[in-house]
Length: 370
Ligand SMILES: [Zn+2]
View 1 (cartoon, rainbow, N blue to C red):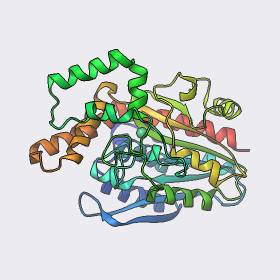
View 2 (view 1 turned 30 degrees about the horizontal axis):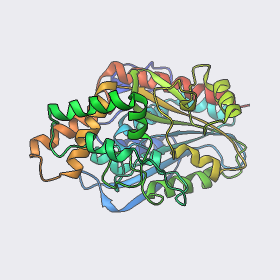
View 3 (view 1 turned 135 degrees about the vertical axis):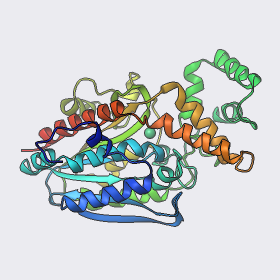
């Protein structure tokens, strides 16, 4: 495809991949073709679902130094990488947009598959069941979430599919405590149950350490960094909600994000997002690792099927906790259900995803560049 050829269904489809191995191979090949500087951070001691190498791959366009940096990252939440990788491959195909960044003196950094294990093995979490967006915390002060234990007993029953009695018990909990309290207890993050949901871990994960090293290396000396981190699973199908990636109370930073990406940038801590305020977001690493930079970022959170995501997560977590209880057929069905809940395998959805990401990249490029 050249920059004069409009994107059509098949060219958009070609940006997305059927599995991690395909996504990685395409990312590397396209980045090489486009003359990016490439580096590979291999996750040692683990292999992918097809026996393939697992790695976070990084492609840089433009110079290091003090040029502004536009970051596009994927796969913090493993299986959500099907979407984020597609956005990155669409940019690698987009010579017009890359040329615009070049002309305006904006360096572009693509971080592919921050959690390669989860991407390959169809998990939202990493090789240690850690939710990376709960793992970027100060481990001297781990996340305290005492309400989680009771909710886990409801959400991860011993048998799957859950019984009618289990559904009733969840309904009773929500009626007694309220929907907000229920969801806060569930998703805030927890460090007590290593085989539970939204587990923060007890130490920085490999992905955490790797991402920090990438940011230090490529963020060094930058005065301005704008970061788009692609996720899926929340909000209306096909809509990319722009969620501010700052910490609660960073009002000025939120204004900067709105100046770049528009008035519809929302903040979980302001209560107007599909996402809830959680502790330990990966994107907060830029604050610690690039202290000299004015860093601003969003999560681009694409809606899939909101009602399916939590059910799929529960099922897949049950499978993780009871690996021998499921038949091969049930196992495959649960994995497929998780994939479907976080990636809509449909051309129309892929087109919406790629188009909205292009807008966000263009906005950042114009805001950062000269
Ligand atoms: Zn996510």
